[in-house]
Length: 612
Image (cartoon, rainbow, N blue to C red; front, side):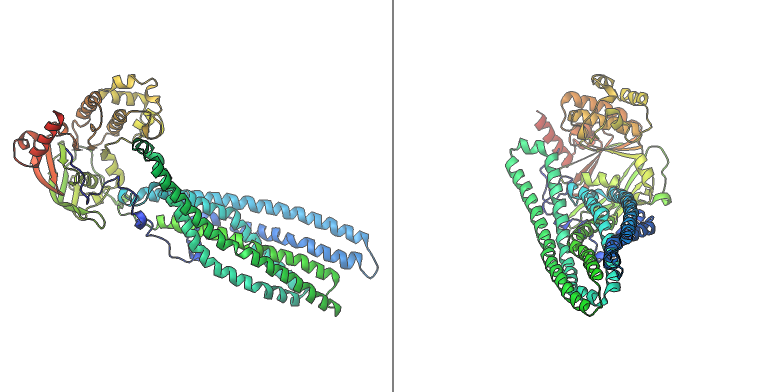
């Protein structure tokens, strides 16, 4: 039935080469870092829930850090070197008060961490749900524009990177900002002159971090992209392991993975090289600042403007001031990595679904055999040639239709438009006179079911896979469906019956058995329009007989459209559509077309020769 694919054909099994211009990757957030963060927080309102209480706890926890410097100053100036000599009672009271306040500070710090973690996890759960559901809303064409692993990474590892920052970097940012502010205020209370000295020393560091932030933003976006590419390549390799072994391409595949891993490592190293540049500079600035404070402090103290206790307290406070500066590298490191993750997640959410669900405003189709109408439909893939050209055909209710043609003739595109996996570029596809674009998805998916050429099964039991579209179905109803399709003997041959585990993608079953499960699943869904992508291809003769028998019962009383890779399927159909180069070139019953010169007769003759 099929000839080699033409170079202009688009299929679902296109390789990943050239996917650098992914539809999703084009939808990157162009916001500033602050704008990206603001948009991300708006998408997950849980982040802001109880924020003011968290900030209040942070203020108390941060204020607690000044207890020790103030206590030391008071003990030195009033408890040890006061005008009346050492006062041990005063020292004892200060130590006890300090200990009590530190306990309160620790409690507030614990509560702050707890609230922040809870809010973060709730917010990220919401973000994951939104991102996953949005991916589900995107058309198959959009999803296929990006590697599955790379797409999954946008919903998993990119969100995990956001989680790391929100739980660790976010906490550190809040505490460090508060600590910097409190330390500056108290230092100014002790000596505004020394405070100016400290800020003059550290201003170059702040400007350097600000400049570095722009470079880190680009570097970590590249890291997230390379990580997504790596996960995509690994996922594809795992799924295609059997093909890789069959063709002996393990070394070449491993080299491809190595290249992807090395590209990720290179991106990570470049980003880390930038982020690590701040630390040595910050240490030098801190050392210079300490020396300057001691020198200027002693000079001020000689004039009686600063006591020994105040100078020592100031040095303690300067340590609190320096800590956030030293942590700036790690904070900005995680922040830029998180913002890169935000941008990739927002890239998914900003991608407008090209197949829109009209929702509650959509039309609900009545039950019963469906009439299908293609009204001068034309379709071409993005930046590709026309694959369906002015297709105009009506399929009457209850018809069993076979669609035949060489590979690349437009058969698959025809059924994708019929099931609204894509929308036509021109013309209209109608069910019972209603434009498919106006039919609510709940109604469309309830009435139209497609059985692909390779039945996909989920890692669950046989029964769960069969009741996938009707989860409320009982085991008795499933067994009745199996019996009605003439497959009771097959089900009985399975040791655990409906409880048989099928494994990932149904790998514990044969290809033919997976197809049987897909047919029973479609039967339980009870569609009015059944679309089949040659269910009997690539199976043994015994299984083919079973499948054909099940198909005869499954299509009875329903409108059905089957892509026929074997002309035996066309022989059993009420009507045959013959596609060639995107057009319908013949239409009629098998008995009419087989004796008429044309594409169908040639295909049939080829099939007879190959079967001889």
